[in-house]
Length: 174
Image 1 (tube, rainbow, N blue to C red):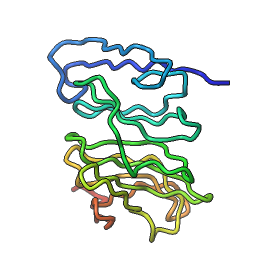
Image 2 (image 1 turned 30 degrees about the vertical axis):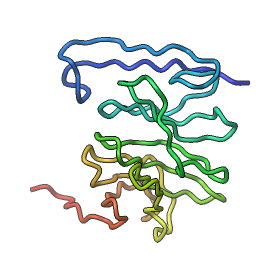
Image 3 (image 1 turned 90 degrees about the vertical axis):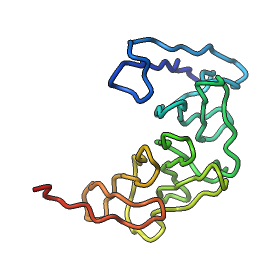
Image 4 (image 1 turned 180 degrees about the vertical axis):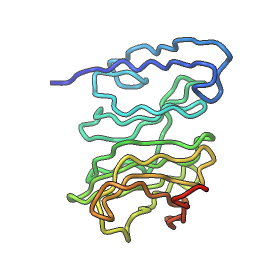
């Protein structure tokens, strides 16, 4: 059974980047053909950064990452990002829209991928990490990716740069 989730964006001063100084509700129309933000499919994990809304959906029969441009009110092509043999989840996008980070499960193994919209290339950031990973997010400038990992037998937060190198974040900020 397919269900539809109507995605609305609340833009409030101080809560979202690029707000207009007053609270407002932004609604996008439902499109039964799946060419807009809202469709008959499940729309999951929406995230907003600048002009973009990124989310996962099962519109084509597999769970893929979609990108919506709020300025043009159109879906943005992501060539080379989605794969028939992977289940994508929890996408996040840099403020300028160049970098997309997402979790994907392929053959029972989870990984964190970084997609560069300029080069149209995806890179597995966690290929050398022998652990389960989930829930990635990318910094506004696209230089750092944080995600959860079971590397130590529990869920911990790791921070990598966009080249897949772990960053040494001090545990005690004093």
